[in-house]
Amino acid sequence: MKKNFPASVRLTLSLIAAVGVFFLLFWLEGQRTEQGMLISILQKSVILSIAAVSMNLLTGFTGLFSLGQAGFMAIGAYVTGLIAMPVSSVDNVFYVSGMADGLRSFKESLSVLPTPLLITLALLAGGLIAAIFAALVGIPVLRLKSDYLAIATLGFSEIVRAIIAAPQLDRITNGSYGLKAIPGFDSGGGRGSLLIPFGVAVACITFIVLLIRSSYGRAFKAIREDEIAAEAMGIGLFKHKQLAFIISSFFTAISGGLLAMFMRSIDARAFQVTLTYDILLIVVIGGIGSITGSIVGAFLVTFAKEWWLRFFDQPLVINGFKVPLLRTGFRMVVFSIFLMLIVLFYRKGLMGNREFSWYRLLSWPARIGRRKKSLPSGDEEALK
Amino acid sequence: MSLLEINGLKVNYGGIEALKGIDFHVDEGEIVTLIGANGAGKSTTLKSISGLVRASGGEIRYDGEKISGLDPQKIVARGISLVPEGRRVFPNLTVLENLRIGAYLNKDADAVEQEIERVYKLFPRLEERHWQQAGTLSGGEQQMLAVGRGLMAHPKILMMDEPSLGLAPLIVKDIFKKILEINQSGVTVLLIEQNANAALKIAHRGYVMVTGNITLTGSGTDLLNDASVREAYLGTKTNG
Image (cartoon, rainbow over all chains, first blue to last red; front, side, top):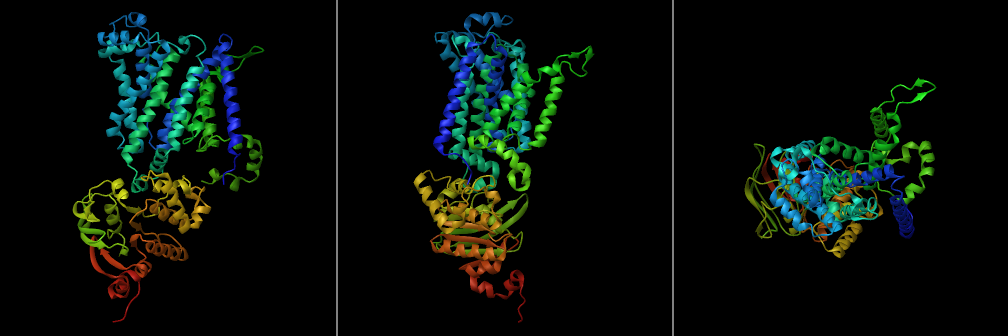
């Protein structure tokens, strides 16, 4: 039997941790000037964690290797940006060709809504439109297997990007000029710059976790493990793959919408394949098939990339001796080396396919000592 | 009227005729076995009954209704479940999760719990190991799990594809004892075996398949004593 604390202990610990995090975020919001860097990195981490968890729902739990993340994020970002952008800024942003009349009157009719409601609506609309796209694209694409599916979804993502930047859509997406003046998290007034993205992330990830624990989640995992056996058990392959794909795309687009609010101005180039690779990286580092792994991975990768390794980008002179290699861009080299080390030593990512447990966390120091002594029997993962 | 009737069933696999129009039937309460060499079309027969493979001709009738052409879900829901060849348990899921997936189409939580109890009574070993990942079970235990998972759908007909594959003789004996027990509890069994000896011993009736055709049929004991069967599948020469 898996070792763990009783449910009451776990619940208490989790509640304490949640309250602690809440107050920490609340306190950080007040320190906006001193802690600007930390706040923006936290924002980006938590936004990417939604995309990573959504990707994990597909790749880690349903066994569908899709690389369409950037495309769905672009859909979410543009829909959210277009709806949430104040009508008063429209002429400024669309200064080249102007905004399509239908879209403008639609925005004017929405402008009676209070900002928080408008933003909620904008995020949901982004998610829904991405879900519709996923449903349509899924019909042909989900019949493909493994790498073929990856290539097809990658193609879809590039098509989305190309269409957004197309001059023919200038009056809707503003073509290659991109969208600006997208309201940020603090635009509702008061403290929202951390609590809003964290709140949305908690809601999205909770939904995905509940889905995975439901009988649908079991069916997803069965498909991942063995499609033929799953079909023989009466699980409809296409229906369940489609469901996972649509839900994953919905939340990926929510993450894209939040990213638009985080960046304030977006253009199609922000949604290149590299964005998909960043998310894939987070999923792999965290552990394919582990929700907590994806969350931890999102924070770890973002913090390392944006902050901890900044040191390597600055020239350093000690006693007149200029340390070699330290220059702009070198941090990415160091980052890549770290990635290789992680992949070498944690072949299944930091969490493997396990989830966070208080017992494992608190018994970690003891386990490290044990593992060194008895490697063969100590870790089931090492045997595989 | 038989519970399951197969009339002139044909299946093509990429241009090759795997089944060339076979007829057989299974009556309620029976154990019927299909025996034959590799590539005779035994697995294809089961796959087409469960809807995993489309038939190119003929029909399959169950309880008087035509079921050929239906989706696998509908066929499972009507009471035909398949224990696939090579066990195919879900390796990274626990024993209990595997069992629950077997009852996927049953949305009544209490009924599912009852099915689990029933399977545990039949295979106490599964209850002992319910939290263990299925991939870490021994071959025999995995076969028990595969059979248990098949029973979770509460089938009228349980179809088993080579349950003895790759198992030690002692465990094979055990599995066949369980198959008898399942049959005595009221489940009709359609069994495919290369281990013809063991299969014919417990079967009421048997069919011999050779390259997509049924060549011989009879009661289990008749086939067991048939000279040509003995020579071809049981590896014993008979004099005279």
